[in-house]
Image (cartoon, one colour):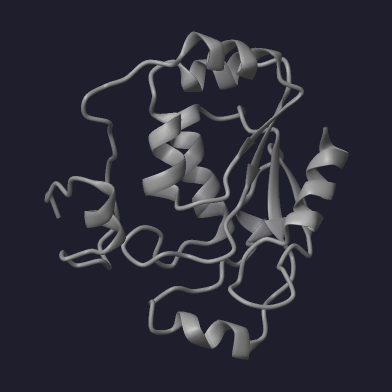
Amino acid sequence: DGQIIRGETNIDIPSHDGRLKIGRIWLEPEVSINPTAKKIISDADLVVLGPGDLYTSLLPNILVDGISSALKNTNGKVVYVGNLMTKFGETNNFSASDFLRVVEEHVGPGVVDYFVANSERPTSSRLRPYVGEKASFVELDLENFSKKPLIVAASLIRRKGFIRHDPEKLAKLLWELA
């Protein structure tokens, strides 16, 4: 609605109407890529983006001047690991393709080679604690993806506790992609 919300905390814990969509994000002050990071990205076999809060964790790193260029020019494959749950104030009602769309708006179309998505829906009892947070499960809406990136769908949710990626399952999948 034209408001400027400054700072991660003010996005994470909205005092504004958290149902509003974020229209634009930028870094202030602008910063540039570290030359060592640029070389590491360039030489990597696999560059993994995410998972994490889209607007307060992932995109601030992508917005660093030189990062999107480094991702476009890397010798390796670029993998974006999609989130399992939405976050109120950031990604309300987002599906998997919405996450990818926003990332591609910042890195450019065709940069992401693989989109890793969870294919398993958590039980209603595991989802119940998220109702109070106004968070919801990220649905894999395959019909809204194009041919690139390649979608890699797998059961990735850990067995108990918070709904998070199972680190062993995700590591195994990423290793296979590498």
